[in-house]
Length: 460
Ligand code: SF4
Ligand code: SF4
Image (cartoon, rainbow, N blue to C red; front, side):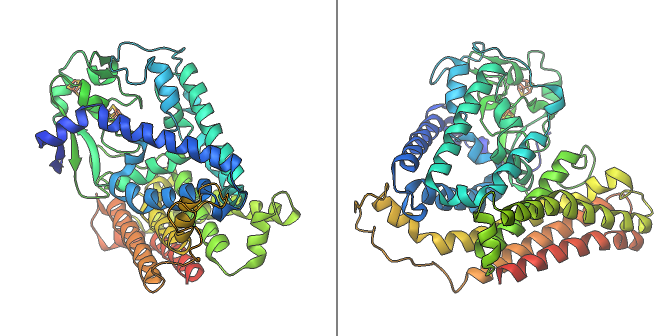
């Protein structure tokens, strides 16, 4: 039984390209070289943020590509070429391109059971969020952040098994994983029955051709994208040609139905934190409120502590609290009982994912188009030392596509709201298709509509 969708790896050319280690290795190694250069540029270059390549390439070009293209289309595609864990992975495997998965260095400890979830990633993301204003504008802060992430990933790879850093610690990987549930691109086994009867499970254990799943996932039962890093090792190791890259309808992983489970509470909070952060970043970076901007930038001032308190309360209390209230009101109207209790909140929270991604796309469209010309300046003068490599270093600041940006932002928010409505209806109606059940969705959808409206007001 094939998975729903088109099996991209049925194309022999694409399959050969993906099974070969070279293309993926070259892209990842190039990304590592670029990140290394950016870290050096951040430390040695000009402290003026919009003149330093570390700021412009990371927070405008990379961020724009990640949120506007890679995550919506490819889910965890970035994770398959991310340079941050590469030094750790190379050390763990004992070589730059070590294919033999039976060879592993390091202590290989199991990640502590209590932290096998998103909570540390939630804490890490919030820590970055409260210092985001200086990180986004001070090249040295960005440089040290990149270095710290590589060093932590290296240390974790030497102590713990496989990609524990990516799976349980990386603050970027946490939200990419959550939003990858919307992605049309997925890795799945062609026939789960073949896996059930295959005794050696090479995809998980590894063999001479490749490594056991670095993300600690067993592909035979994989039915959601969140924890699959699209590293393609299982495509290389499976001796029965039972693994495929699949192109299927977006949101497939969120649709309620047999074999699907509601979000876990750590994922609910991840969704709430991301939506709250999109609201706050939009207000700080793109809104007209000077006092708010000043509070976010003046780290450790009294205003900054108020700003941080507001951000944390919004992310950890207001968004999840109002969502829980909306779900409990809906539960009174819901004859099927799907919105009742903690599980009801977990079901209702599925809409946070499309709405949150829509919110981040809308924010990033404004941010990237407004500041994109700084990337050209910095490419021509990467360290801010007065060079002019491409004749662009004195190009005047020029926001791009100003005429259509609001339209695109509105479209992104409406698409996010439509996705939230679709998922919420599916969650509530998949067992009981009555008018009363539809009404049960109304409080939750009203909450999502209010969040979308707040974002539209901030961005307008
Ligand atoms: S090696 Fe292939 S057939 Fe065996 S369990 Fe893994 S994916 Fe299934
Ligand atoms: S080995 Fe397969 S299941 Fe595991 S992360 Fe890589 S692509 Fe995903």
